[in-house]
Image (cartoon, helix red, strand yellow):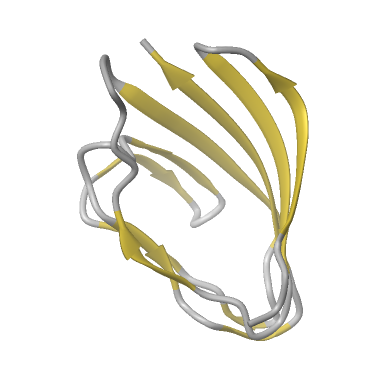
Length: 98
């Protein structure tokens, strides 16, 4: 599987910002992200959509704007990204654990 590039812009115990690039042939299997305590939120901005594939799926998104901006609870709901057939998927991800 192709390698994901994850650049941490900011990181603390409660809040983080990451710039993530998913290359061609990458996919993310359905999963949830458990946390030890509190509530975990992610706000993802898709900066570059792949030419084909790379579709984000979440069993319960709080916000989904134009399949480009997603607010969801990765600790409570399963989420995944289908295989990127062509191009790359680039996102700016904000995570908050409160």
